[in-house]
Length: 227
Ligand code: DX5
Ligand code: ZN
Image 1 (tube, rainbow, N blue to C red):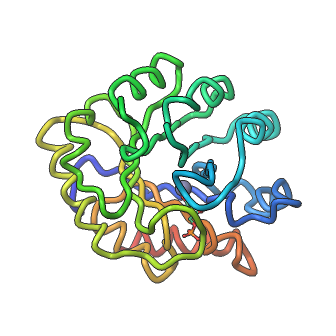
Image 2 (image 1 turned 180 degrees about the vertical axis):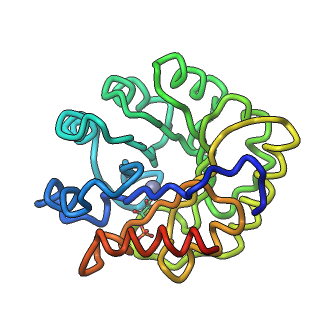
């Protein structure tokens, strides 16, 4: 294990982007409650080349699944312009991309002051050094292991080095943020992510495109536990 602060066991966050949009509730119910967080991808067709949902979905999820930990991943630019509408929906976590926020310190502080846990996201090509100054402000660092925009892309294994680096920084600076990884995580890649120190695995197509989504989560948990 790369970091002594790593949470045990690994948390699994199914990504709703891969669920059938006409049957999202049924897709969640098919997991029989066996998920730790629900990951909600918000895309603007500008920062990333795809469009997805807005705050209405977060509000509806909160109403129907009040106990669920909603993990909202904003892929919108400028990130600052979208904070009020998502803070009003009161997810558990709200993450903004380093690449999409000119005033990152202010954005993360605003999320915290809005009563939501702030997180910062890095694209695969963005180095960890760029977020070192804001690490004390966050509860979550999300490492993209694909370029964001779509589900079902291939895992970029080099990104695991950034998880190792973050674990060391977290320990050296006595911080307690969680490390999440997003993109291409499946039965073939989850052990590698876990061994690099990842605490939370986002899984889209590997869960919702599986014939039995609940079995896919159970298998992911087992592989992470053995890693
Ligand atoms: C990609 C999104 C991911 C996506 C992951 O831009 O941020 O959350 O749903 O999907 P998979 O797990 O299929 O790569
Ligand atoms: Zn995501």
